[in-house]
Image (cartoon, rainbow, N blue to C red; front, side, top):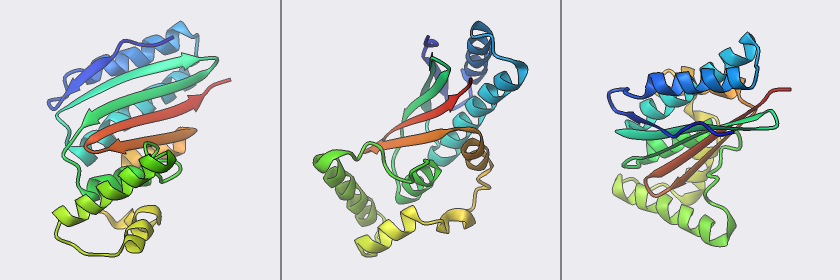
Length: 176
């Protein structure tokens, strides 16, 4: 079962539709109140996190459900910066870019990192980049990270794929 794809703009139009879609999916699958609240929470925090981190104008959102596994999908485009990239990747369960698979994907990912570094007029080594991105040094970022904390504690898995300025986020939660 899959919900309709919901477009959410920079003014928040569509946010209510996303929440309604989560409620309707919970009702259609006969989930209890507690599970329904988790679906709502994941939806709300996922949309809030991406909006805060990326300042994206438009996002596409939908939920898929099969055999008790709920997958929340979000895609958007943004002008990528190293800070946005780092904050997004730190949110993922693996703290890695899921779009960087295979040899070519990993090479493209390293190239994109280098381009971001070059565009920001900084010059750290690639080992410093890897250390900064994949370590827990981002707990002192300026935004409060509430959405990230709630999402990581509620979801079973968070995957984030970044290719250029395109972001794909999939949050998974299984209910028995």
